[in-house]
Amino acid sequence: MVGLQPSEMDWSKYPIEKVLHYVAGVIPGIVALILLELVPPGTLRGILNSGFLGYRTTIALILLLAFVIGNTLSTGLGMLLIVPMATLGAITYGIRSRSSYQDRHAYDPAPWRDPNWRALAKMHLGDRAPNDTLLEPRKSFDFKRKMQEILPEKLRTVSLAAMDAQRNSLEQDDGNWAYWYQHFHDLIIQEEDRSFDTYIRKGLVFNLETAAVFLVVCAFGVPTIRHWWVIVPASAWIIYLILEMAGEYAKRLDRWSTFAAQIKYLSKKDT
Image (cartoon, rainbow, N blue to C red; front, side):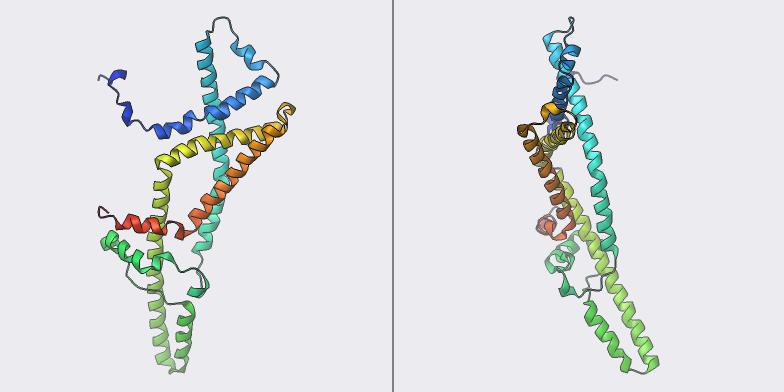
């Protein structure tokens, strides 16, 4: 089987925006190499100053080292950040899984109960759409249930059983609508994360944040870099990283954050 020659490859179809994240890994890599040159001074220079290496080979070797070291650092930082995000996600899921007996007006109305969203979702889901029912506020249901106490015992038992069965059915329908809303919520966020601008921004910004974290950590053991013009910018990038993580978590937690995007997505004729 004959493979494609380099001249025959269609580079226009290559996902350049995805590669940028790895290419930008040279940023923390170069920072790491500079620190290697400082501790002790001349270490990197001594490794690269070999008589048989030309300047082009030397530059290529430096970029290769920066690429490998930088992507190792950014991957490591990414894995460390997964732990708190996964923990917060598990806590959020646990809280949402609990049955809520609050009045409907005691918290923000659930977005999956919005009639406009539900009508579009029904068209999109077709036969998969849950029953179009509306969950009665718990306080109103409890009041009606209490009113059954005036009935004779036998009739009261039958009435309460029917009310509980209907309530369970409505809660199941509401839970199914909540599931589909969460499905589209996650879908919209994933689509936004795959956009060209997001790839470019995250590719550059995350590697700058990785370099900042590396500098601040190394500053504890390398007195040479303990200068305000190093620590202040690095700290600013770390603060931005924390705010970015908090914003991402808040966006995923707030189901209303993708409501408008879901309306637009579900309104498309090709869906």
